[in-house]
Amino acid sequence: MKKADLGDIAILIDFDGTITTEDTNDKLVEDYWNDDIEKFFRENNERDMKYVEFMDGLFSKIRITEKEYLDFILNEIEMADGFLEFYKKVKGYNIPVAIISGGFDNGIVAFLKKYGIEDIQVYANHLNFNGDSITIDYFHKRDPKCCHIGLCGNCKISHVRKFKERYGKVLFIGDGITDEPIASRADIVFAKDGLLRYCKDHDLDCIPWKDFFDIEEILFA
Image (cartoon, rainbow, N blue to C red):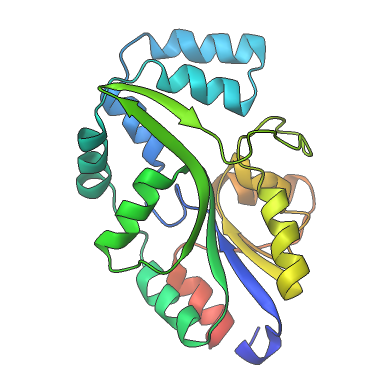
Protein backbone atom coordinates (compact mmCIF):
# COMPACT_ATOMS: atom_id res chain seq x y z
CA MET A 1 0.00 0.00 0.00
CA LYS A 2 1.47 3.33 -1.08
CA LYS A 3 0.79 6.78 0.32
CA ALA A 4 -0.94 7.66 -2.95
CA ASP A 5 -3.45 4.85 -2.32
CA LEU A 6 -4.67 6.28 1.00
CA GLY A 7 -6.94 8.92 -0.50
CA ASP A 8 -9.41 10.60 1.85
CA ILE A 9 -8.75 8.77 5.08
CA ALA A 10 -8.38 9.35 8.81
CA ILE A 11 -6.23 7.30 11.15
CA LEU A 12 -7.64 6.24 14.53
CA ILE A 13 -5.33 4.64 17.09
CA ASP A 14 -5.92 2.78 20.34
CA PHE A 15 -3.72 3.84 23.26
CA ASP A 16 -3.08 1.13 25.88
CA GLY A 17 -0.86 -1.62 24.52
CA THR A 18 -0.79 0.10 21.13
CA ILE A 19 0.93 3.45 21.61
CA THR A 20 2.32 2.14 24.91
CA THR A 21 4.33 -1.04 25.34
CA GLU A 22 1.88 -2.35 27.95
CA ASP A 23 -1.64 -1.66 29.16
CA THR A 24 -1.42 1.18 31.69
CA ASN A 25 -4.47 -0.04 33.58
CA ASP A 26 -3.11 -3.58 33.92
CA LYS A 27 0.11 -2.21 35.36
CA LEU A 28 -1.78 0.19 37.61
CA VAL A 29 -3.73 -2.72 39.09
CA GLU A 30 -0.53 -4.70 39.50
CA ASP A 31 1.12 -1.85 41.41
CA TYR A 32 -1.80 -0.31 43.34
CA TRP A 33 -4.56 -2.91 43.75
CA ASN A 34 -5.74 -3.17 47.35
CA ASP A 35 -7.81 -6.35 47.43
CA ASP A 36 -7.95 -9.98 46.30
CA ILE A 37 -7.49 -9.61 42.55
CA GLU A 38 -8.12 -13.28 41.79
CA LYS A 39 -11.45 -13.12 43.61
CA PHE A 40 -12.45 -10.02 41.66
CA PHE A 41 -11.71 -11.68 38.33
CA ARG A 42 -13.59 -14.82 39.39
CA GLU A 43 -16.61 -12.68 40.21
CA ASN A 44 -16.23 -10.89 36.89
CA ASN A 45 -16.32 -14.18 35.01
CA GLU A 46 -19.20 -15.58 37.06
CA ARG A 47 -21.34 -12.47 36.67
CA ASP A 48 -20.23 -11.68 33.11
CA MET A 49 -19.64 -8.02 34.01
CA LYS A 50 -19.77 -5.54 31.17
CA TYR A 51 -16.87 -3.17 30.63
CA VAL A 52 -18.26 -0.19 32.59
CA GLU A 53 -19.23 -2.32 35.59
CA PHE A 54 -15.86 -4.06 35.48
CA MET A 55 -13.87 -0.81 35.36
CA ASP A 56 -15.93 0.82 38.11
CA GLY A 57 -15.30 -2.18 40.34
CA LEU A 58 -11.63 -2.28 39.45
CA PHE A 59 -10.91 1.36 40.18
CA SER A 60 -12.96 1.37 43.39
CA LYS A 61 -10.20 -0.78 44.90
CA ILE A 62 -7.26 1.32 43.69
CA ARG A 63 -5.87 3.88 46.09
CA ILE A 64 -3.77 6.52 44.36
CA THR A 65 -3.73 10.33 44.24
CA GLU A 66 -3.80 12.28 40.99
CA LYS A 67 -0.15 13.25 41.42
CA GLU A 68 0.83 9.64 42.07
CA TYR A 69 -1.17 8.55 39.03
CA LEU A 70 0.54 11.05 36.72
CA ASP A 71 3.95 10.18 38.15
CA PHE A 72 3.14 6.53 37.43
CA ILE A 73 2.13 7.28 33.83
CA LEU A 74 5.16 9.47 33.15
CA ASN A 75 7.78 7.30 34.83
CA GLU A 76 6.56 3.70 34.54
CA ILE A 77 5.01 3.57 31.07
CA GLU A 78 7.01 3.43 27.83
CA MET A 79 6.12 4.44 24.28
CA ALA A 80 5.89 1.77 21.60
CA ASP A 81 8.79 1.60 19.15
CA GLY A 82 8.34 3.86 16.16
CA PHE A 83 5.24 5.73 17.29
CA LEU A 84 6.86 9.14 17.50
CA GLU A 85 8.38 8.76 14.04
CA PHE A 86 5.10 7.43 12.66
CA TYR A 87 3.11 10.32 14.10
CA LYS A 88 5.50 12.89 12.64
CA LYS A 89 5.20 11.21 9.24
CA VAL A 90 1.39 11.21 9.41
CA LYS A 91 1.32 14.88 10.40
CA GLY A 92 3.74 15.68 7.61
CA TYR A 93 1.21 14.33 5.11
CA ASN A 94 -1.64 16.21 6.85
CA ILE A 95 -3.56 13.01 7.48
CA PRO A 96 -6.20 13.44 10.21
CA VAL A 97 -5.30 11.31 13.23
CA ALA A 98 -6.91 10.75 16.62
CA ILE A 99 -6.68 8.46 19.64
CA ILE A 100 -9.79 6.53 20.68
CA SER A 101 -9.34 4.70 23.95
CA GLY A 102 -11.21 2.84 26.65
CA GLY A 103 -8.60 4.33 29.00
CA PHE A 104 -8.31 7.78 30.47
CA ASP A 105 -7.46 11.17 29.01
CA ASN A 106 -5.70 12.27 32.24
CA GLY A 107 -2.87 9.87 31.57
CA ILE A 108 -2.98 9.89 27.76
CA VAL A 109 -2.62 13.66 27.39
CA ALA A 110 0.17 13.84 29.99
CA PHE A 111 2.01 10.90 28.42
CA LEU A 112 1.91 12.37 24.92
CA LYS A 113 2.94 15.80 26.16
CA LYS A 114 6.06 14.21 27.63
CA TYR A 115 7.08 13.38 24.06
CA GLY A 116 6.13 16.78 22.65
CA ILE A 117 2.77 15.71 21.19
CA GLU A 118 0.12 18.26 22.10
CA ASP A 119 -1.91 18.56 18.90
CA ILE A 120 -3.62 15.17 18.67
CA GLN A 121 -7.32 14.65 19.32
CA VAL A 122 -8.00 12.30 22.24
CA TYR A 123 -11.35 10.57 22.77
CA ALA A 124 -11.22 8.72 26.09
CA ASN A 125 -12.80 8.41 29.52
CA HIS A 126 -11.74 10.55 32.49
CA LEU A 127 -10.63 9.80 36.05
CA ASN A 128 -11.88 11.94 38.93
CA PHE A 129 -9.69 12.01 42.03
CA ASN A 130 -10.86 12.67 45.57
CA GLY A 131 -7.70 12.26 47.60
CA ASP A 132 -6.67 8.69 46.83
CA SER A 133 -10.16 7.58 45.73
CA ILE A 134 -11.18 7.39 42.07
CA THR A 135 -14.42 7.57 40.13
CA ILE A 136 -14.78 7.43 36.35
CA ASP A 137 -16.53 9.80 33.95
CA TYR A 138 -17.29 7.91 30.74
CA PHE A 139 -17.09 9.62 27.35
CA HIS A 140 -20.48 8.25 26.34
CA LYS A 141 -22.68 8.63 29.39
CA ARG A 142 -25.53 7.06 27.45
CA ASP A 143 -23.74 4.20 25.78
CA PRO A 144 -25.20 3.21 22.36
CA LYS A 145 -24.85 -0.51 23.24
CA CYS A 146 -24.11 -1.27 19.61
CA CYS A 147 -21.70 -4.22 19.85
CA HIS A 148 -21.01 -7.49 21.67
CA ILE A 149 -19.00 -5.75 24.40
CA GLY A 150 -22.12 -4.00 25.67
CA LEU A 151 -21.77 -0.91 27.84
CA CYS A 152 -18.20 0.20 27.17
CA GLY A 153 -18.19 3.86 28.21
CA ASN A 154 -16.46 5.11 25.08
CA CYS A 155 -18.07 3.61 21.97
CA LYS A 156 -15.32 3.28 19.39
CA ILE A 157 -17.86 2.38 16.72
CA SER A 158 -19.44 5.83 17.14
CA HIS A 159 -16.08 7.49 16.58
CA VAL A 160 -15.41 5.41 13.47
CA ARG A 161 -18.80 6.40 12.04
CA LYS A 162 -18.20 10.11 12.64
CA PHE A 163 -14.72 10.02 11.10
CA LYS A 164 -16.04 8.09 8.10
CA GLU A 165 -18.76 10.67 7.56
CA ARG A 166 -16.17 13.46 7.61
CA TYR A 167 -13.21 11.87 5.84
CA GLY A 168 -14.59 8.96 3.82
CA LYS A 169 -12.42 6.13 5.14
CA VAL A 170 -10.90 5.07 8.46
CA LEU A 171 -7.65 3.23 9.11
CA PHE A 172 -7.51 1.76 12.62
CA ILE A 173 -4.53 0.54 14.65
CA GLY A 174 -5.14 -1.55 17.77
CA ASP A 175 -4.46 -4.60 19.88
CA GLY A 176 -7.18 -5.50 22.37
CA ILE A 177 -10.75 -6.38 23.31
CA THR A 178 -12.22 -2.87 23.08
CA ASP A 179 -10.88 -2.73 19.52
CA GLU A 180 -12.75 -5.84 18.37
CA PRO A 181 -15.97 -4.06 17.30
CA ILE A 182 -13.96 -1.87 14.91
CA ALA A 183 -12.38 -4.80 13.11
CA SER A 184 -15.39 -5.24 10.80
CA ARG A 185 -16.11 -1.53 10.44
CA ALA A 186 -12.83 0.27 9.68
CA ASP A 187 -11.67 0.23 6.06
CA ILE A 188 -8.12 -0.81 6.97
CA VAL A 189 -7.18 -2.53 10.24
CA PHE A 190 -3.69 -3.01 11.65
CA ALA A 191 -3.99 -5.65 14.36
CA LYS A 192 -1.71 -7.36 16.86
CA ASP A 193 -2.06 -9.52 19.99
CA GLY A 194 -5.70 -10.11 21.01
CA LEU A 195 -7.14 -8.11 18.14
CA LEU A 196 -5.12 -10.10 15.63
CA ARG A 197 -6.39 -13.36 17.13
CA TYR A 198 -9.95 -12.03 17.02
CA CYS A 199 -9.62 -11.08 13.35
CA LYS A 200 -8.24 -14.50 12.47
CA ASP A 201 -10.95 -16.30 14.46
CA HIS A 202 -13.67 -14.29 12.70
CA ASP A 203 -12.09 -14.31 9.23
CA LEU A 204 -11.73 -10.53 9.16
CA ASP A 205 -9.20 -8.79 6.95
CA CYS A 206 -6.36 -7.14 8.83
CA ILE A 207 -2.67 -6.34 8.55
CA PRO A 208 -0.46 -7.79 11.33
CA TRP A 209 2.07 -5.45 12.92
CA LYS A 210 4.68 -5.53 15.68
CA ASP A 211 5.76 -1.89 15.94
CA PHE A 212 4.99 1.42 14.24
CA PHE A 213 8.01 1.09 11.99
CA ASP A 214 6.13 -1.81 10.34
CA ILE A 215 3.08 0.37 9.76
CA GLU A 216 5.12 3.30 8.49
CA GLU A 217 6.90 1.08 6.00
CA ILE A 218 3.65 -0.35 4.68
CA LEU A 219 1.87 3.00 4.38
CA PHE A 220 4.66 5.29 3.25
CA ALA A 221 7.32 3.18 1.53
